[in-house]
Length: 365
Image (tube, rainbow, N blue to C red; front, side, top):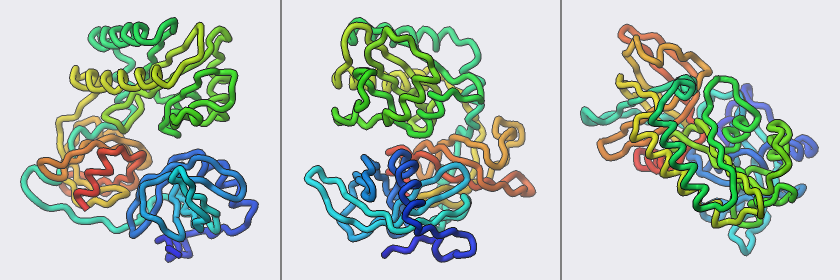
């Protein structure tokens, strides 16, 4: 069976084989949060569909195998769950049986990084911005941004009859329960009928689990005169949720076509807000020194920039220019910082890789 890198560092890893603990961790974490499959020192995206003790059903695009090692990162810990493959379903999913779990502190790399070298344009980071800077900009006034949001709200109302549309931007460092759940799961809410427990999953929409959505509704205190809800995240370049739109139906349950309409409009809105410079920017660039599928290191010489307020444990976004035609945006946590004679070296661990980010890393590595 595939041995995770943490298994080789027994002094730093905690091994869990107790069936009761495995059941609890798989049910509460691996079946609900974003996961990856680790194979050949690479992280491959996967999605957990459901957990029925003792089996976990997952969906991915990898070749068949007899075992899987699932990676989940939460707070300051990384969890590697070794599983045997029980079977494959007609839907193309796999049924896994958890066998053992390795729990480690974050910061231990799951693979070695590759040094970067190349042309003058290669190996640069640009627009390095701490997450709170987006919230600060959102809290400010912007007639252009507000007019754009109103334009899209009206467009949604035309395409989704008898609905109420609300846009919400994150304006402070303190996250609401809804925003915490959206960022944690990186999934929309699709509740065609709020009174029913099974929601988007039965209509082939991967949405926030209903148990989590119930917590959001209790926290929001939504009035009872809405029938269904669509809540689609608003992302900065696909990696950081900076707000969301809520679409409430007032007369009839929502349908899958209306969900896709809202989703497509939000992707267009994200591009429009970016093009109209409604987000913060940072013109000072840095030099990438190494990279892996899990993170990168870069040297930054700009002393008076928005990055000077960030420290270890803080989260940032950045545009990585690996080559002239290989550019992607990433979000990550600062895991370490080293002072240099002419600047600082930052070690970043990626969080929530976008599809574009996965593609860029595969092309680079």
